[in-house]
Image 1 (cartoon, rainbow, N blue to C red):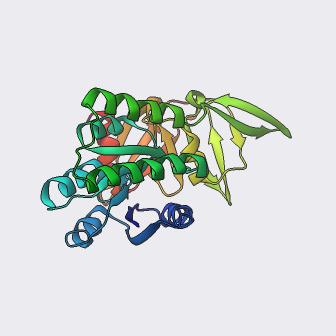
Image 2 (cartoon, helix red, strand yellow):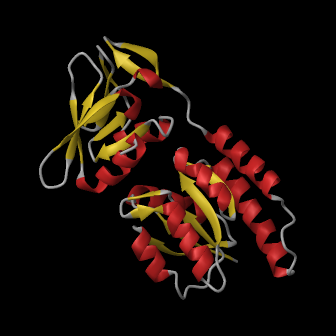
Amino acid sequence: MLKVFIVDDEMPSRAELRYLLEQYADVQVVGEAGSGREALERLQDAELDAVFLDIHLHDSDGVEVANELLTTLAKPPIIIFASAYDAHAVRAFELEAVDYIVKPFSEQRLDKTVCRLRKYKAKLATAVEPAVGIEQRIASLLQNMLQDQPPRRIPVEKNGKIMLIDADEIVYATVEGRYATIFTDQQQYFTSFTLQELESRLPMPHFIRTHRAYIVNLNKTVELVPWFKGTVHLVMEDQRNSEVPVSRNAVKEVKKRLGF
């Protein structure tokens, strides 16, 4: 039996991954955590095989959480990064990450991960160190990540027509009602995606969720304006000089990605 633990600060993502994993007869989800701090506390004495770990957690960096687990636990778990592809993923190469899967999770892709987990656990059980050099592991992870990257063209609605726009044209997106609305330099487009679904389709690291209701293209950001109670606003590069809010929880990550 493969005992696994899920760490993700978005409840829908945890629920989706749990459901998919529980379809395997030999996989048992032993717990979940919604933050890095909670994960570190709950996993200190846990006996498990693998952790599915999101890189972007609202309170911490998932790569740092993984490093903490690998260096402090007597029997560290196998690490599977489960997140959107971004610049931080390169740091996963420095850790003993077995795989990297991209949201939204597909059954076919998860099959490969579970098979890899089974093989890795079998090798560990026979006291045979997995014979995979760093170059081979990096190549394998990179190939998986590139294969899983979301499409760069996004279907949108305009005047009753379905159009495809390049993701790089997007300045920011917000949610109006249930579905996301996209803003480019001059245009506004409607979509049939929720904001979370749209986020999973946008290539990282250029796009980031700055607020529960906003996603921005950091390449289209021209100014960062301090706001009140630790928040900031981003001034965007469009004809409207749009301002997009950044929640207090996202300020640190936004500043990091912008080079502050």
